[in-house]
Length: 79
Image (cartoon, rainbow, N blue to C red; front, side, top):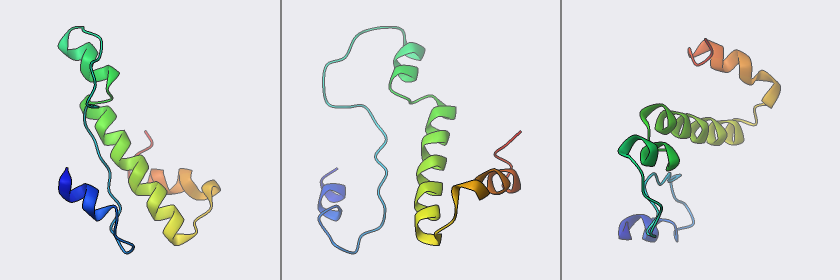
């Protein structure tokens, strides 16, 4: 955490995606409910990573959003 906070202060830094639980008291519930609420189920984590990767990739490559369905289909993300 301290290293990632320091890296965020640098001007030429790699993108950072923080996935985890906020440092605050939350409501209770069963394990699966709590994971789902915090977007920590496997498919939710995968979607978070995929969305972040493609948002960075599109920004760097100046890709148009209209070409996204073809891109997702080409990498097997559309079923």
